[in-house]
Amino acid sequence: MRKILLLTLCLCLLVSPALGETAGEQEALSRTELIAWRAALLQTLKTLPVQNNPSETNDPNGSDTWLYAYDFGMVELGRESLEGEGNPIESVEVLTTGVSCPRDVEVGDTLETVLAAYPNENPTLSGDASYAALYVREDGTLEGGNGWGWVLRRGSTVDCVQYAASAPAEGLPGYREEVTVRYLIENGVVASIQISGFDQLISDAESLANLASVQEISAVSTFTPSGEPVSGGPFAAADLSFDGLDFTAAPETFQAVLGAPLSDETSADGAVRTLTYAGALVECVQVDGQWRASALLAMQAGVPGPRGVVVGDALEGVLTRFGADAQTLSGATVPLYGEAGEGDWGLLSDGEGGSRVAEYVCVTDEGTYGLRMTFFDGVMSEYLLYRQEGA
Image 1 (tube, one colour):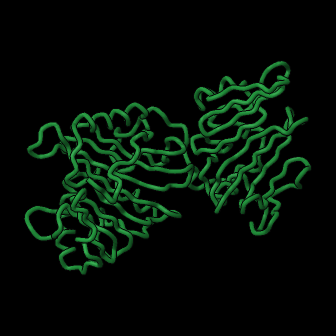
Image 2 (image 1 turned 180 degrees about the horizontal axis):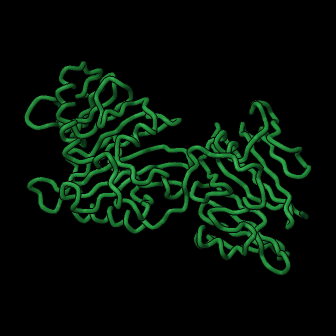
Image 3 (image 1 turned 45 degrees about the horizontal axis):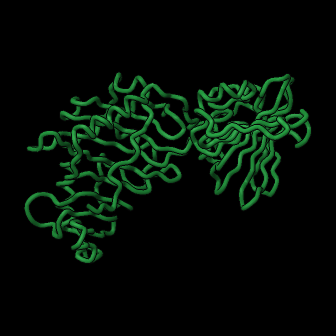
């Protein structure tokens, strides 16, 4: 069956071990709630003008759905007409205001409004740099099924908040209907709302496998975003870590965070060792006869760096974490603090291809270290934690 909306996003989310132990003020999303909302929406649609010809959206050779365009967005039906027995609405995408949405959350509302409308048993959004769970309802506890809420993010930048509920399908033993509400977030506000999964069946085994996936990773809690970052002052020796690991330690310890390296190569002269991981690269040199990291390049959000910065973070938020004396961030070169090349310093400058580069350097007893972060359109694309050669 052709679908215009994704019915399922990745279920590999990170769930705090405490989720479900403390009930929130709001009730978890339920299938009954969304069925009632769909019934009210059907009556509303019958009063609104359709902006397209739905029959032109159906492929008689491969599609049994019809798309109805309205001023507020799109509706997908399982038959050609709104009239008739039963409710034909299978999925909805709301792109603007003008129609009632679940929990009265509207396009244009803030991320905080979304989170406040549902249970949130993880207010710090602890998880990893890509996912965080908001609540989990065990199988059998939510209308005979299960449910959850979670956040998809790139570091501290939230892209999506999704809530799901799975309940047994009437008259079809062994099957369930899983309905979802998905809020797509841009610049901290709701850009669109997708409600989907009506009349779409999954097996009990699939539902339980989804829940098992959530439970398996419920013990992982490696990243907490700084929603209101507080400056800790200039970049310093205490910041020489990534995902809780000492950057100056032996590279073998990195496997606990980065996993096994995809490759481990040593230069022909034996002076440089390069380890390649999924989303990161580590370069090592010999220090007192032992391999030690001289550079870490992170290219994916799964590797939190100094002070929790990750790929996907916004430029302004990152600068706030390290402090800045600059009165403005505009200009090809903006001193943040200190004087470049002398002691501890921070600098924001133009990079290649329209990028902006924020770089911090600190002098320690063991050497001189730097953190170089590259941003495109105000969003971090990579960071490099390094030790200066000869320092």
